[in-house]
Length: 287
Image (cartoon, rainbow, N blue to C red):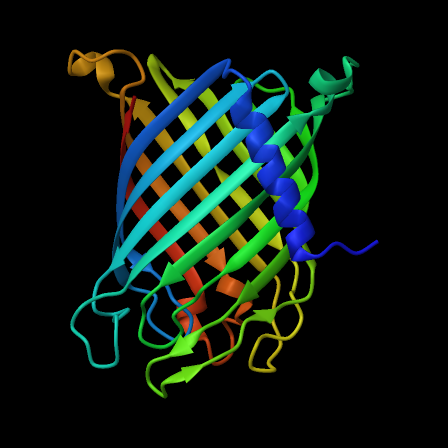
C-alpha cells in the first residue's frame, strides 16, 4: 500500500496533537550552542566554520513521547550566502518526532530480550537555507516502527520510511528547480541518552545515528548513494559548580561523522565536502 505525503503529514499532525493534548508526565526544554571548524558541504569545502544555536524540547505523556529540535546554522564565507559573497550562509533545520508506545496504548507487555517496549514513530524534517549554489527547501515525512531498548536512560532504534522532496534554487545561474520527490527509501536510526560515570565524574552519552539508503535519482538526473550520519556528544553537568539546580547547565564535546552527505557520492564531483568529520564544543541551558 502506498501513502502520499499529504497522508503521512496528516498522520504526523494528528500524532502531534494527540501528544500535546495530554498532560506531560515529564519534559525537558533547552537552548544550546555548538561550534566547529570542520563542517562540510557537498561541492564545497570540508573545513567550514559554523556556529549553531538550537532549541530542543522532549516530553513524555500517557501514551508516548514528543521530540522537537530547531537548529539555526550560521556558516563562514567558505559556504557563502551568494556568489562572491563574503557573508556565510544561514540555515534553519527543524525536526519533529512523535512515538506512540504500543504497550501504554494496549495495556500489554511487549518486553522481550533487550527490548523493553515497542512503538510507532512519525514526524517530519523541514529546512530552508540561503547558500549560493543550492538553497535547499527540504521537506521530509517519516514513519515506522521503533524498538525501545532496556538501558539506563533511553535507546530507541527505529526503521523509518522517508518521503523526501526538495526545490533548490541556483543563484549562480538564477535557475529554480521545481519541487522534486525522491524515491521512498528506508532509514535505520538510533537515538540515545545514556548516563555513565568516569570515575567519580557523572557524564551522559547522547546522540543519534542515521543509516540512510539510496533515494534513487536526484532532481538533476544523477544517482544518489547511501549515507551515514552519526552525531554524538559526551556532556557534563556543570550546574553544581556554579550554584545552579542540577541538570541546568551542561557542557561537553561533540563529534559528527557524515559520509555521502545528502546522498552525494564523496568520491566523485561532490568531493571531500560530502564527507564531514566534525569535532565541536557544545553548551546547553535547560529550563
